[in-house]
Length: 117
Image (cartoon, rainbow, N blue to C red; front, side, top):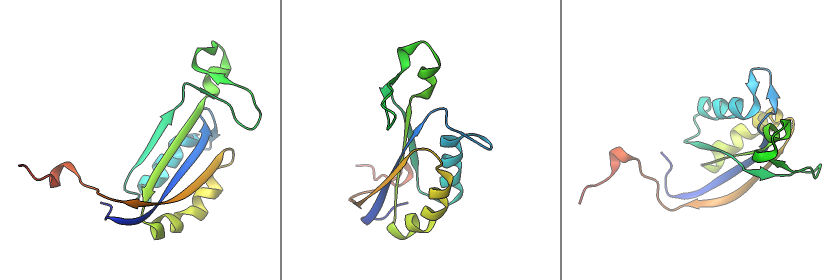
């Protein structure tokens, strides 16, 4: 569980259909983050978007461009933990964009730790 204090938030911008040796890249990244002990990660599929090629990809396109929609993955963890896995993560992402922002954890609690009033 994350403790209150400084942390690093990493956001990864990919295409849904970006492949890897074992399937789709976003699935590999989620598996990688879990195996490395990252506290949690989220993958969101966008309705529409475009990247550096300036071609719009929309869910309602009705052709293969609908499968090329953006996926956004993000995770937050202790700065040292994130920095330790970044070199390997940077190698994994062969097509996309990775950004990181310092952040601060104000509160992190899991269901089992909730205090009943």
